[in-house]
Image (cartoon, rainbow, N blue to C red; front, top):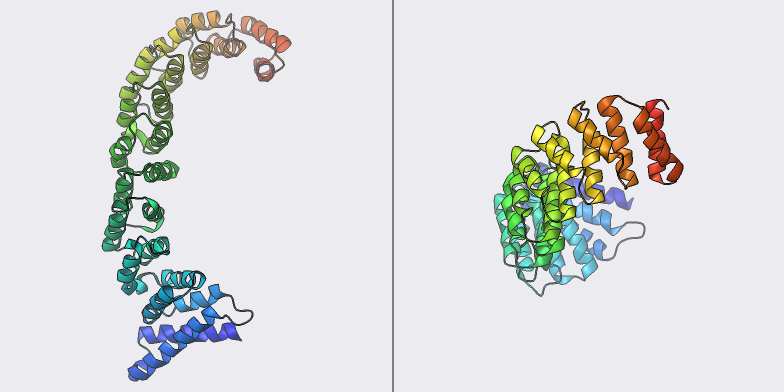
Length: 386
């Protein structure tokens, strides 16, 4: 019965806000509506048995603009739990609660107010299509020196229709590392991100902070081919760790542009083995290019086993029947590293069609390796018909 009563009250509120038959007696209708809203607010504080506060808050939210002043008063005068439900009611109104924005802005700007974050979240839900609301939230983020409120603004981006990019750019320039880190993390989780964000992402990290650089590389990877120039610049860092992260991100970016391929070829001559390994991985998609193929063939005789393995693996993934490929794979089948011998045997078989020599290598691996290399060798022999 009580739930039915609230439904009736909500319908009455909607009818009043829409200009129904009660418009013939506006003073009487307004007074009746205010009384009904006050009754719901009182029951929000002391809910009847079996009626959850969340349901009452929903009904208040459906009352629209007439309930805004009383809900704001409730926020100012009530304990935390009741105030939280008042925020919920305002959020449900969305654009109909636009009159609440000035007071919510005051709350958000008050550094001592306990409901600053709630105010920010509510503002975002009230005006997602309003440019002024987006500008306001951006202003709150920029002027929050401590960063606590800035994080709340940042997390409101899913509902912002107009200014979400502006909010992220401001967050990436924020003085607090936690805000920049959170912005990078969120950008890295997005399915697609506009390429013009690449420069702010680059500027948000100095190339010395490992975690920030890693997050920046992840975000840049999401931005597609247009972000490759930023990754190429980052991959030339003096820091070995930064080079690794940038090259790893660049190796995942598609398609591989000529500029990216040129950077991988440079990295293949780096003194650091891990950098050469990432270069081999990055060149794999463009192995059809003679220049890339020559670099990979050279890396098959690198002093580092992981570099050799990456190069042989890249060649194996292609289907070339070229003399230089067969020659390099024949040598790699004698490598001291079992994983390299495995990849080389399969690549040699694919490049030449010959079975005898690679099958002997694989049979030796099956006999001596009880790990994943042995199992993969068994599977390769089965594909060869052995």
